[in-house]
Length: 236
Image 1 (cartoon, one colour):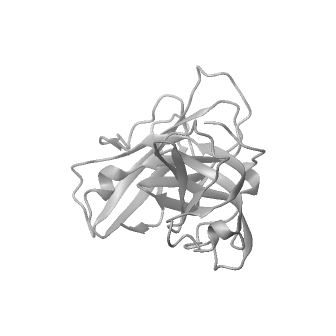
Image 2 (cartoon, helix red, strand yellow; image 1 turned 90 degrees about the vertical axis):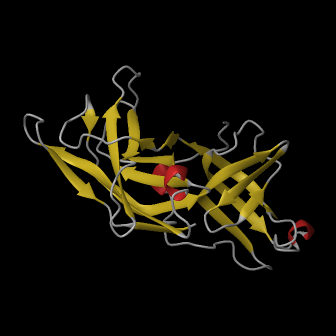
């Protein structure tokens, strides 16, 4: 995918508490670093946003792929005739895109992780941010890391045979350093999407899960310290 404009993850807006965000007609608004998922049908490329809105711009590159996660900066002018219906008739709003940043995407892995064993070159997390998004079965996850100079590899897995208590799935996030990749200064905040359709297809009205992640090892790396997030709840 092609990146439009300059993006700095340190200035990501706090978006996790926003639901339907684009306001009412008669406004001109700007949204920055907003999570979205690309839906591509033939020559039509639209972006589905957190909160259920759909936006379109002729400046969105045709090189993006269906299902790609992005962070998008855009302005929306409701006074334009093309937006007179507030998107209710056409099903989308036309916006002016100033920046579009691809978000690395991963599949949810269906296997039981060995939570007692340290993986080769495993990396700890400082924390998982509260902000997130769940769009078209893509879960946007923002994580905090200590300074590093090697790219990181992310894996999110679950036990497909888990006995579910209170309908809550347990997911396990493992992060490792890609030692064979060229060194480059890594930002302390990392952002990824995970396709969790395997879980959402198991449920009917809502999806509940928590993520377990590694925060430390003992001196000889024989024991792992795990922490779990609060439970995520998403309507389906």
